Structure formats: structure tokens, C-alpha cells
Image (spheres, helix red, strand yellow):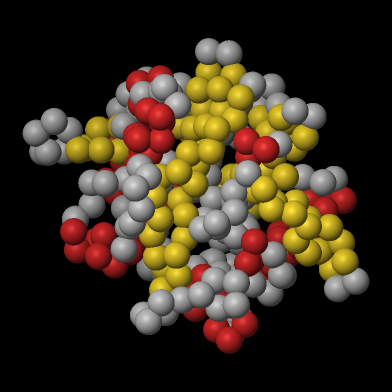
Length: 279
């Protein structure tokens, strides 16, 4: 098995929304905001090569939305999903499994693209199975008013219409050593992959822990639909991650790819940060 970090570009989100009830005077020490209170965030994906399987976890924002849409999120940087895959010698047609932690636009938008004449949308990965969870799919296609702007039909219906959608069940293994646990605080049925790699456990954190700046328990995003559930899910996970020395792969941290944790006098805290390739 080989793992590759896939950078798809950076975007900006409101710092207050990203840190919830935590005051700006505190969170800006780790994530400084610009003059519009926007902070920089990565959209970092993970590629797993295992035999004849090529599994991509999440796929970034994509490039098919309107200029008005992108103006809200300030997409920037030189990296794109397709460029990062190409740099490793892969094409979209090589992807066998497109695993989506959840269907918010910054996690799944790159999985669908315009067709050739821009009259409709098609899956970016024509040979891939697109994996979601059934509870989350139902949540996304019948969105509540609070999340409606994050679930864009053009991002999610094309791979269902193409017959490429399958639902992943808890306690399944996609491949040996690839397991998932479900969390429901950020959104219903978000899936968190855990991969055994070089005798260690790599956890793709998605939006359970967007960055190292979110390690303190109270640092819960304003986007989360059930923040008190997130708080408990996060507490349970961080304790386990520190005790078992999990390596956390960070999707949104603008600087750090990976980290691990230790238990200090005041609870779980950051231990080290490092790159995936240094494991």
C-alpha cells in the first residue's frame, strides 16, 4: 500500500464560522484572518494505492461553479486535483473508488465536472465507484435550511444518475486495513476513514478536526449542525488518538499535513506535526 497527499488548492472561510464560540482574540493566534475576517484553508485529499485499487478520499471544490460562487470563497493557489494526480502519474480514469467523507461542496465538488459542451454534468471519475453513507445521502438530497447552501445538486446527483453510487456500511472494510467510523455532529453520517499503514493508524480527519488549531475541545465550528454531539465525538476520539498514537491527516490545515497528540496536564494537546511522506 502507498499513500499520497493530494493538494487541490486553498480557499477562504470566515474565521468566526470556523471557530464557533471561541473569541477571535484567541483563534487568530493560530489562524490569522485577513481584513475581511477570512482565514486560509486547504482542501487536502488522500490517495491510496493498493494493488489494482486506487482510492481517493474527498476531492476538493472542483472548478465548475460560477465566478460569483468562487468570489465568496476566494479559491487560490497553484494546486488542483487533476494537476496533483498527474504529478503522480495518475489520471481521473485510474481512480477505482471515490470515497466521500460527506457531501459539503468543498469535499465533493471535484467529483463532478461539465460535459464536453457544458450542457450538463458528468462524474469526473468515470471508472470509479462513488461511496457515501446512506444516512448522509438522505440528509444531503433532502437538506435542512441550515445546510442547504452546502449541498449542491450538481455536485451529488450526477454520480447517482450514472449508477456509480454505493453506500458504505459501518464495520465494513473497503480494502484490508481500511475501516471507517461514523460521526453525526458536523453533519449526519460523516465517515472518518482509518487506514493501517506501515504498522500505524492514519486517520483522515475531514471536518471532525479540520486543523491543529481545532484540537482544544471547545473549538467546534459554527457550521456543525449538532455542536454538543461534536464535542462528545471529538473528546472520545482525541483521547483514543493520543492513547494509541494515531496519525491524524488534516484536510483543511493550511500548513500542516499530519500531526499526533499527547495527553498533558490540561488534557489532550498537539505533540508533533509532520508530512505524510516522512512517516
